Length: 120
Image 1 (cartoon, rainbow, N blue to C red):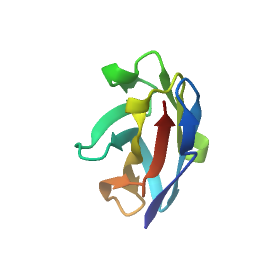
Image 2: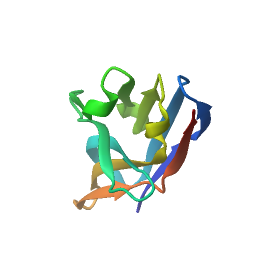
Image 3: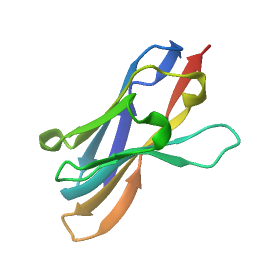
């Protein structure tokens, strides 16, 4: 059994910063990609950023230069530092991880989501 637990969401004014964390736990053999997605009300879920085990990163155009994704492999944790937040960043943010378990199962796991609200 694998769990992803997110933390760090909340309410912030435009121009402010938040840092999201997501820790994976359970029967983990290895983790390939970890990332963050978001879903605003009435919109589809979209990729915000991801990072593979080697450290390469990818960002949505809308967050480039403002958000930074990083990971601590020893802690099976991924972070999303969000700076210069805008009202349009308001959404539920979901952590995602491609995990191989000790019994050889590879699967994409999702966290429960954390609300980020940016006021204007």
